Image (cartoon, rainbow, N blue to C red; front, side, top):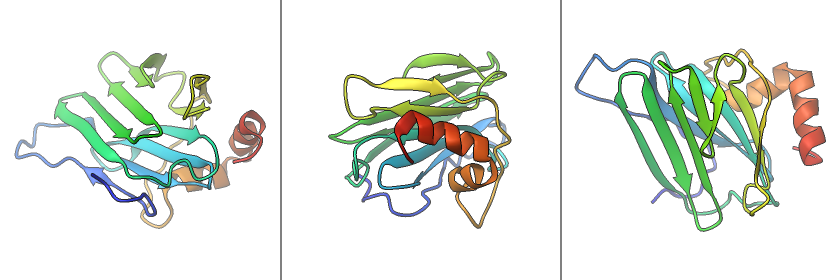
Length: 163
């Protein structure tokens, strides 16, 4: 079980096999009291897919269980699960597909997503387009992306009523 998510939580899957390429880990960071960012990483630590999960205030301040698999060459998935929500992402680089909350999307068209109503039956996945997801050691990539791309930030705010 994972304690409350308060800081950048990079979880890099390490393997004895150097042949693993592609999807190699995941990370998560609370962007606000309503929004938790969750992403999958490629070999060099750069995010492949970024998902902003939005719900009621403090919904993400809970105990999380982590599950993931990064053993297939170009396929990997990560999941955060709590009593309040299950956050699921999967990437298949060979097929050029991302799966967000079990809904398929083309990676060529979208690598950034917003999931609204994360904790209830009205859950909706909104593709936000293809963005330059940067590797960073100083700021979480999720915060940096919103700070750098004002149009993306405005879109997220309009879909959620605020970040």
